[in-house]
Image (tube, rainbow, N blue to C red; front, side, top):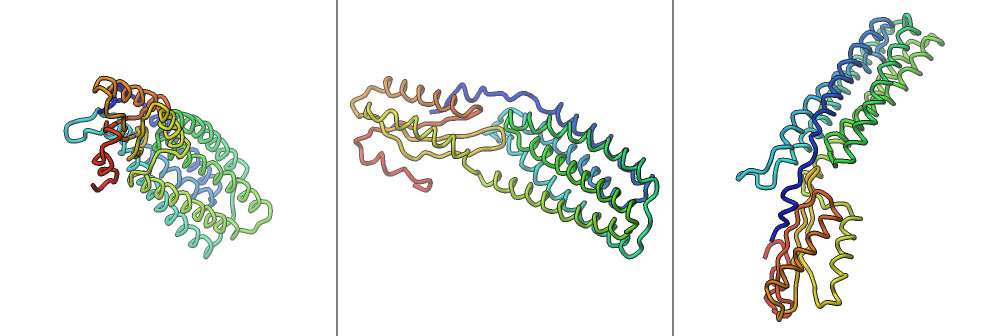
Length: 307
């Protein structure tokens, strides 16, 4: 038995936020490249290279959000929401690739250090780029959490990491210009690369966990259990409760055991009531229940995934 109302769940289109991220990435690329051209700082160059990753990631996020929004088909009866995990994983790999390019440029500059020119003007341009990223990251994070979109959340975290990275680079480049320690510039770039690797690895790991049919959050599972337990006084039991999530969509299946003397109509009405209450607890949830007589031994032979 499935919750028909859950099948009609439609998440608002999130592609406009991906377009916002694309616009922000394009603007920050231009600004950061200008900052690098003005100063010659490899630290600022590393910051600009990461913005190219931001643009590529935003384009992938847009394409995956379009795919994820497709309605279910005969071949994909549960929809396409897992496409968002592909966007997040790809973004993680892009970040790691950018870190390798930054590290290479930093090592070359460490061997052949150069002074930083027009630091004040270059840093002012970089600050402007960081403010754009900060504003867009806050919007993406808020919308990603509101609509349970791992693709938008991943893009937001990536942009926020870029903000903090830029802040560190700005402070450090200013220190280099003030002290004249030119090799501090490539050293900063290497620290930036290490931080980017950590971010990329975290995003990739989270995506892999999602593709492995991870359960819904513990708080929601506990709420479902409490709901099912509340029917014990009516002689109703349950087992084989399973949950999983696929980006913005959640799935719950459960066996509901009712007294054998109940009519089919009464048991069906109870199952519909329980499914509706579960959907209220877990928005965007598809609920599937299976009715069984509580006193029949065969009702307990199908508890496990592999019967």
